[in-house]
Length: 112
Image 1 (cartoon, rainbow, N blue to C red):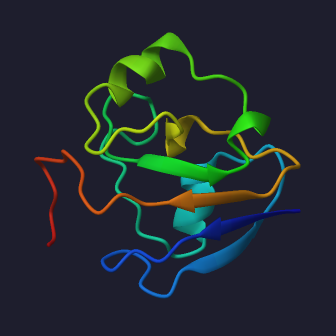
Image 2 (image 1 turned 180 degrees about the horizontal axis):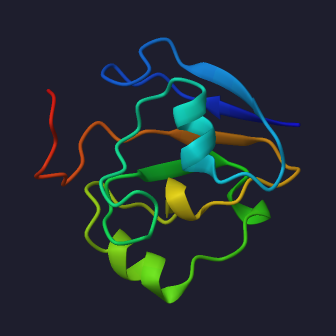
């Protein structure tokens, strides 16, 4: 199991959270299973940027983003050099620390 540390986010995860995740699992799915209500408007097919996250620790352990993910990341609010889409990150053996950006470009958001 790999530890994913979610930094505090006032809207989604106010106290932060440490989640144990099995290697090979998709990060977005793992966060949702743990009760972190990360936005995911396209259901994980890399067709939007709503599950944009920032990898604060462990970024270099991840496989590089593919072109489709890079194209979607260009639309993300608050893009950084260590930004990824949670629906495209496969958890490995290295612990990750992630930040959930305060805002997204989800125009179809159902709740505030």
